[in-house]
Image (cartoon, rainbow, N blue to C red; front, side, top):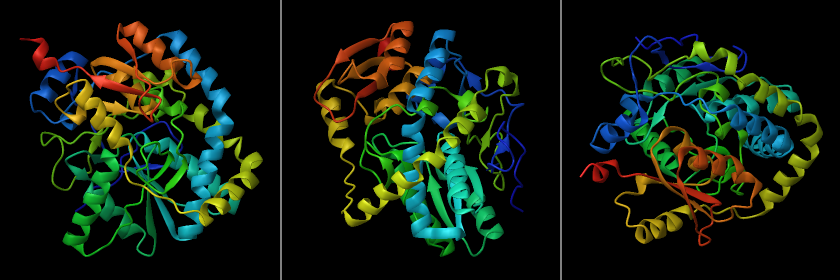
Length: 370
């Protein structure tokens, strides 16, 4: 018996179905410092949750300012990736976003295709966890409910490519177990890491949904895989932060970007027509930057190096940051990062020699105790 979807999150039922077990009653949170120590001592990051950081008003105001400033750019990137998905897979597509950064992107792709082609694609949000793989129960649920369809995995952006690699590995394992081949090509808004051929842009720019945690992701936590709460037939878990409803801007974000779609239909189609004539390479070019940074700063593991605007933001929101490397501090895409770094007392180091705009370095907390 495979689990049934839980009713969770603040999004409309018509936008997404979360294939997650609701762990709202479980005691999973720990302070950022304690959690970092445990993770670096060997506990898997997916077994616990960070306490949801609620940024100060000036940061939320900056988020809203940037959201309005980049709404057309985000809409165009959504349009470009949506057009490619529809050309490749058509009306039999099932959108499967990777919770939680992929969820708003999946909703926007669904909305775009519905507006542009008058086709309502199913959209699910499921869990994938680095070193633990994808939620196979969720995949089996989708395949059993949509036997003649083809899955398209969706995420927000790429960093150094860890999730892209995890997805490819998970799809290979799924085929070995069940003789079912899944398309491991990830659809993202931005691919600064050169990890996929299905992207809206390769520019490392500010995607507003990277700026907040659950309050821009349907009030859903990051996903959890902990044997104390997740049985063999369960979906991976997450919490629904109902108590943060007053701060929730998840649907505001969706509606604002959605309102831009009609105006960019033709431009998106033109960009895709040109892309189809070009040869799109991957090559995971971001790893060269990461390895260079690892050497220069004597960092034990690449897991402590998080390149790109989206990943750097995440380091500041929910990890213990050590330093922020900045290629161009004057870029409008990093204003919120500089604000968070100042608030948390994190050193910002000029580092022009990288393809990404910035990079977050996680503090090695084990050494700081000695």
